[in-house]
Length: 372
Image 1 (tube, rainbow, N blue to C red):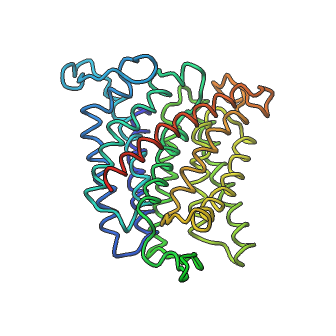
Image 2: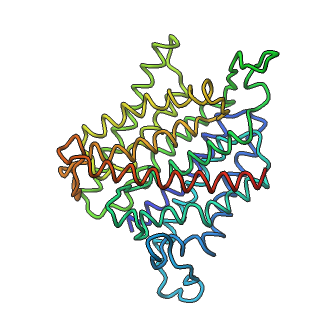
Image 3: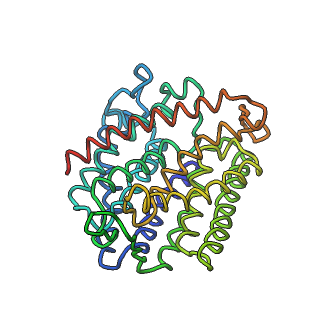
């Protein structure tokens, strides 16, 4: 029952993403944003039924892919209903991350095609490696709730898509030689809606991280780490922006809460309060750095900071398991580098990051190129 309640909380996160993305963009694009968030779940459900679920949780084939099948149609009485719903809402979360980064300049039909492809093939295959009995799970890679499988995948897809689309008109001011001389900010039209979205996401994250817990003790520990990391990240970002700009940056602090949640997602079951604290500190710094890096170094226009939140902190959170995992956490059987476990788990985490990054980067580049 808790597993299904958790699935419902994760579905409710779709509302959070819709509010964040709508609030952080301009009013004229609100309808487009809402429609994308609605349709990436509905289109994703259609293709997940047909092929995505079996590729994710079907019988393992040489550690790379689940065996395609149609048990939902041919053997409904014996079908794994709970796992289907739970993994479907996770899949939808991966897809919806991208809509914010590509906001205000993406054709609706192109976004529909992207949603179908990522939900049918790209996410299910890489998630099978970790959660479906694939090769990453066999070697001991750990990603409890999806810093790597979901957030980094959505983040790198967002980065590739936003880079290929190019910036919104007026984002970067150039001189006659084509050199960028100024970066303009486009303030969101509704900060209260954006803030509501962040609180909805934070609430949903207790299901996102906690639904797969196998004991009350483990669930309690997950709730603790899932609370500490985003809170610390937000305080760090508040201080950083206060010092830099003379006042706290509201939208950056809201994104910092999400960054801390993304950062703790992979290791929420393996860390203690100290580990969650350090994950939050780095997440708060990373979200600020990620936004600056997109604007001033690689010149990628990301209206909602999806790359900084999901890619940077998804990558960080996955690596952090190899640093801060501890057997003092309920049900955890591994120790990270800073808890006397050596570098083995850290190497495994880096292997998982590298392989999923390569798979997603190459496939999403091809998909976006074909839609261009």
